Length: 344
Image (tube, rainbow, N blue to C red):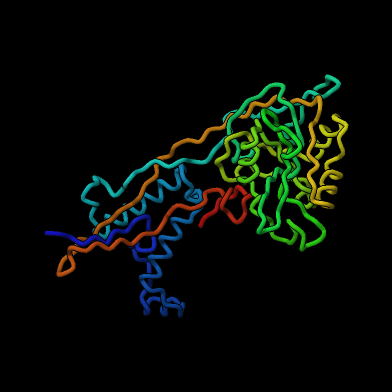
């Protein structure tokens, strides 16, 4: 006999749990005039369990999401849902890529034109997840403005921070976001950033020009009220070269050592006429060692089956939802800088 599937995949909205609802008479007897229906009680029980701090925000790779999966599978069994024909359990496992993480403490140091060494305090620089693993010794450093190459006639954008420099095999210092001209009608004008301002665009363009790594600094607007470094997980992954955020004062030390204008002056000049101010930091080289990894995590779909019958038994209905969430935040969260549990 053929069957109809009503498959509940990654769902908690269709769960049944022990019913703790009061009857109407019990509620009135206890002085509570509000009647809680069995459906409401089930939902409250499910959500209370799944959103509890012990579930750790149900982030991938956490014990909390495994506990949530076990809970859902248990309820499927209790209400009589069958396993999918091809599975021995309610779980359909599959591999996914987890978050990128730094394996060892990042190392960054500079040699200046006079032969001295600038070994910045670890609190003044922060690798970002969009960068990759990478090492380098005595790598030349260049300033490449906002790191933008824009040739878009429709948007009236003709701008290239890499036009006057050779970034191949070098570390590029880049300003965050994109230029901010005073005229809102000018290219890059207005409140909304362009697609060139994204971390993804900056690292891809730097790699396309042969850069060995990126040192990102806050633009003047992002540095207000404080020049705060982003959390490692505040960016997506996917870059092919190391991507490290540094404080503006560190960038200024390097610029000063190379007799270049200050970061504020360079940014102000770019904003004034929308002309790049990229330059080599002659005599400044860097040593860096960034080691990160992105582990593979076993994830689980949870599948329950109701066998079909009648004239439509040869049809299949799939009802799906997700039970994972954001864990402790990071990229994709409305509070990307927070590492608090995102209960969901």
